[in-house]
Image 1 (tube, protein in one colour):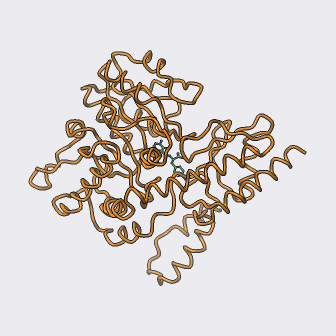
Image 2 (cartoon, rainbow, N blue to C red):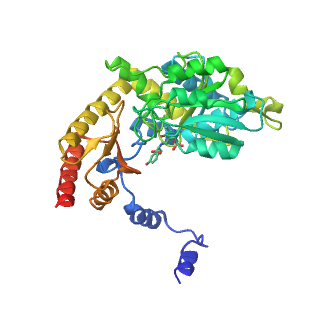
Image 3 (tube, helix red, strand yellow):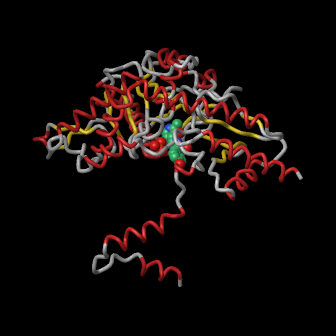
Length: 398
Ligand code: 0PR
């Protein structure tokens, strides 16, 4: 019976095995995983971490941000990291934390919004394009998601958002880089609505946070999305996506300490009861925060700008290539390095499966494919991908 075999093989050995035996076994077992370096991963918002960040991460593995009484210096570095990210988002005074990822950041944001509204339940207005982490947050926090349709540019429909507001609304969520298409919602208009109705506004820039600030400097015209808009209360920005940091590294930034304190809890038995935690997790990685701190300093704005410039350059090559393939088209002109590909003539899920047979990993969003050009992607990968795509389309048509 396979289950018995599984049970047997999953027991902890009584006597420990030599390291080499284990390393070889691991190497063999992990063969099936895809690698960023192969160039075949075109569906991930994560990438191979920067080598300097990996070095730092390994060095400080034992740091635990969950106990500031033991690791006060690491906690200070976390706060400096938050402030650096805040400066990227027009608010160096932002407070918050380096958390496990965008999911935790979005949960914390809605947790704060609900507590600030002094409610145990309520409603949150989100675009239908919002990441599924908001579903998790809604389930955990007793919040009902009111899903708002998109306009013809795949952005949250602002009028529909305004109409969805009720006395139960505790927050509005806008996306600065939707998961499917990298589209930025009209955050300025959402900020005006949030101010008129005095409602908490959270911006999910998990992906866009490390892209949009640099687009402006590269001559693009991205719309405003950050703390420069007066009603933006919190922003999710993930270093483990376009920030090139090792997993786990998400970021939750609040406009001010009052918002952060809405989720702060005292830990009675640490630091003589003077210690507060404002994240979902207790014990959490200090190595992550220190690695982000180090990488921000090492790459600097110029380094990140170069990364974004390169990814965008390759994105345009991909878009041109797709547009040349008969039967395929892009869903909408990309704002950042996320591209949606659709077809009126061939079955998109079939194209997805054919790509997978050839080793390519893209994402299937009901009626379009999502391709993300990350720092691990090279021009040669895009060329190979386009050639395969062209062949698949030709085969499907004959
Ligand atoms: N907000 C947005 C806009 C996101 O796109 C994501 C994840 C999150 C929040 C949640 O972030 P965490 O996954 O860090 O909690 N977006 C990616 C996606 O769904 C997550 C991902 C990353 C999926 C790498 C697959 C993968 O290989 O595409």
